[in-house]
Image (tube, rainbow, N blue to C red; front, side, top):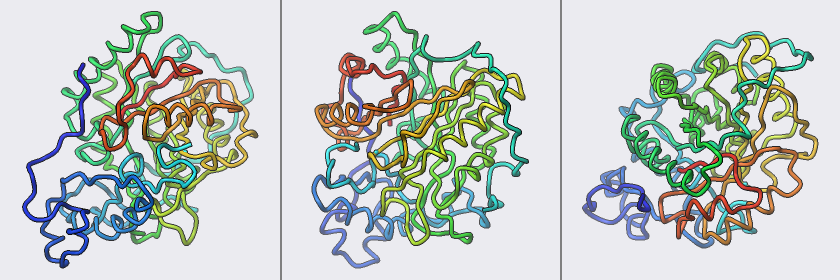
Length: 384
């Protein structure tokens, strides 16, 4: 399959959004600019400043009528912070080419349920996806082109493209079958605090159910990506507990967007602790044991070294397959260096690797042969 790039609309009238001319324009000119134009990501030290400007200006570009998200106390959100995985994350100075990476609100996808009782019995690993298979996933938010390929196409069309990409990997390594997956951003870190001050919005339940049903009908995996804002791992887990009862649905944690009081997602690079990862693993193991489910995947996206504090304290437990996924965009050499640095000394048994179709992030795009030649060879491959 030829290298594809993020689709772009017609040339806009007036200055290009986020260009120097656009930033210097009067407010009425900026408001009139097309919201679908994909900004060119700055390559140098202007990246962090551009992110801050995006967080201020994006609310002007996305009207409330977009209606894609649900916030804690409002049915719609007036602004959407661009997803940091390739479209607005401040690049750490040490790795500018590629990353090294209370009570639940009423807008949560499900009502909070009592904490599952931890079980110490041996978990049956029958039905485990790894290591016999390799997972290939497309990432994004439904209907939003700026947030990944998943938002560029309806599910049926997306599946055809994903199958073509999978065929390229199977041609390189026919010994390991490729399992197809979609990773849906389920909670979206945003640039405004919302009524509850959590800087987070959730996908509407009915929209998420469409993807639950579609992936189930097509023998795919569905990965729920949680971006935190100022919410805890406990709250995020409860928000999707009901969906994790489906055997094919799994969980991903995105520490990059987990921020503390006084911080705003995408203005800083967030982090979670090993204890948070351990909590998620224990809850997934208990959920699987109590409901006779096959082992769950827990994917943690690591963008920089500090994304997971006390990482060495993570202990693998039966019933959960922990996948450390290495984020970061840039040249192939930069991505290889990032992958080597983060996988070194990791407690994880399985590893993932992310690529961006958009040449503003990954250029040139690594080939399947180059990806599989990484050491260790990735168990999970994600395209955004």
